Amino acid sequence: MMDSDQFRKEAHQFVDWIADYFNDIEKYPVKASCIPGSIFSQIPAAPPEYSESMQQIFADFEKVILPGMTHWQNPGFFAYFPANNSFPSILAEFLTSALGAQCMKWETSPAASELEEAVMNWLKSMIGLPGHFEGVIQDSASTSTLCAILTARERSTAFRVNHEGMMEQIVMRVYCSSEAHSSVEKAVKIAGLGKNNLVKIGLDENFSMKSELLEKAIIADIQNGMKPVCVVAALGSTGSTAVDPLPEIAEICKRYDIWLHVDAAYAGSALILPEHRWMIKGVEQADSFVFNPHKWLFTNFDCSAYFVKDSETLINTFKLVPEYLKTQIPEHVNDYSNWGIQLGRRFRALKLWFVIRSFGVRGLQEKLRFQMDLAAKLKSWIDAQNDFEILAPVNLNLVCFRYHPHGLDDTLELNRLNEKLMLAVNGTGSIYISHTKLDGIFTLRMVIAQTHVELRHVRDAWNLILEKSREITD
Ligand SMILES: *Cc1c(COP(=O)(O)O)cnc(C)c1O
Image (cartoon, protein in one colour):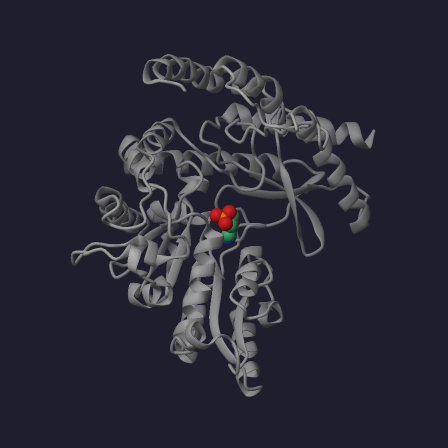
């Protein structure tokens, strides 16, 4: 077995490797291009009987694993939404893994519980959430949204489903826009509400929920004897960062006594900038709110910040204390395993603490502003090109666009052409972009949010897209 002297030696080499990795990261193809099964076939079917040296293991990491990795920290990564890290976050993850603490309860690591409470308060004030919210770190926005829907279900049935199951309950309805994230549907299924009871509300021309359609759907459901329990408002939809009209949705939720959950998984980070606070007007009426520092706040995956107005309802939904977990928990401290689904919990607050302190709020603000300026530049270059068009408002730093050569107006042909363009661009290995469909239109998505992205990366990416668009239509 490895001892601490060997560990020290290996760890120094690993740190050197990591620093070199970041120095050389642009030399790696952003998107892995290996054929399916090619990694699996290189892994022996049976585990080793005897110890192998770290040198051998590491050599295989470089030879077998690395070529099959997509390099999310490469500044040429413009796909999906990012899963950013940063050096302070990586350092904190070193310590978290070294401490190896399982932070389910206050007693099992008081510092983890108390730091979580403190940094969630920091985040709350950084993004301008009202003081009455309380925060807890979940693994992902999917989990946070599931917690919201379960809590909404329990509140609206006076905790009867937790006790008796779904038998004999009236049909419960959940609402979101047709551009809401798929995690809402997943949560509705897991919560036992049935995905046919997720009502997808129509959009306006900016891909935001039409609140008058929401109210109509709610009224119709009530008339049909069903019970509206939760509305999920998207603050920055995944397709195009569309923002649902929170003040109007909040009023409707209040009128019909419906849980309002705000899914700001990606865009929530932008709220650290006062000029983007318009997006959460009305949030004081929300029951829960989620955003992911692991997306656009330079904190390693996983770290999802979940805020609730009433922690008691949340805790009453999840709390379970078997004998073997009974501790004398002092008042005014939190056992976060009662605030969600998992019992065992990683010490996630540490990396957030490191990131916020190391960047400073100002440093984080500057970085986000810089990246949004880059996105505005990209938009202006696209606007200036006759045969490209912007397809959705650029609210933050996601640019939705397509190639639209003069005289070619058939939607299906344009869809095929843009898919071909995306594959051609990604196939070069220098950048990675992704797509969505907006109103049936194949839409290229380019997110300018990677931790190390600079102007030159965006410029080179745009030139590459132009060059490939000429090549595929030649
Ligand atoms: C990314 C995203 C999610 C899912 O986030 P996970 O943390 O991966 O579960 C949910 N909602 C929106 C709007 C997103 O952009």
